Length: 92
Length: 199
Image 1 (spheres, rainbow over the protein chains, first blue to last red):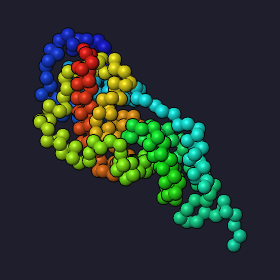
Image 2: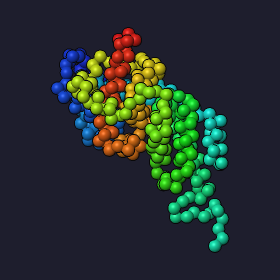
Image 3: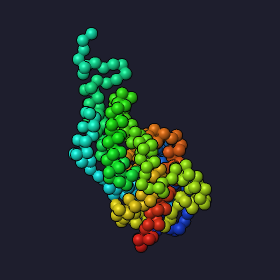
Image 4: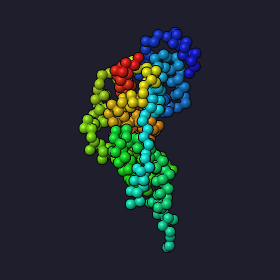
């Protein structure tokens, strides 16, 4: 989404303005971010989100949480000893 | 009829060479993801190692029921999840773990939808500034069943139909459980951010 468009929206819309169907759009945003919407549904969601301050905020937050979980989670390595132990059990 | 063992594949099974090939090239490539999934379920390195080992042994034992070229990762995650529920959860060191159904009933009856789903206090910039430990703590504070579905979707990138097979629940339940889990996680992050003085 264009930064300029967002800047205009921020300047023109009250931060506290609530979307009358916020929960409905939140569900759609989540489905879209989970890759569960069709191309047509995705454009429908994006059209709304681009024009609605609250829903854009929700979209932004949902996206950020997903990225944080993906990129900031602990990633343990499997030791060679464990792989060897498993292979030995298989051979036994 | 004379046949070599490695060429003798019956209609219901793989040859030894095929088994070894599937195990090494289709199963073991997911060992790290499985190990991390196990760790996120148990929070214990030793238990995670045992859980990974059990999963691999079961996968090998039942290798004939795996159709080559299909989704090995989802198949293995399902085995691990079942092992965790059947073997590890029962003897868990954490007596506080409760059954998913109880938790879902509790959350479904808690206040209005709006209260649990929308957390206007949390900002994306705040989440961006959080450390890995803070995200992990928020995730770990959730019930294991909600945590599991978030891990499968956000961390492992499984689609709803795959999660449905792994967890043995209908797609509609995947969708509603995930929606509920995300709302709880968001709430946890908001509480955590407030307690840490994030603005």
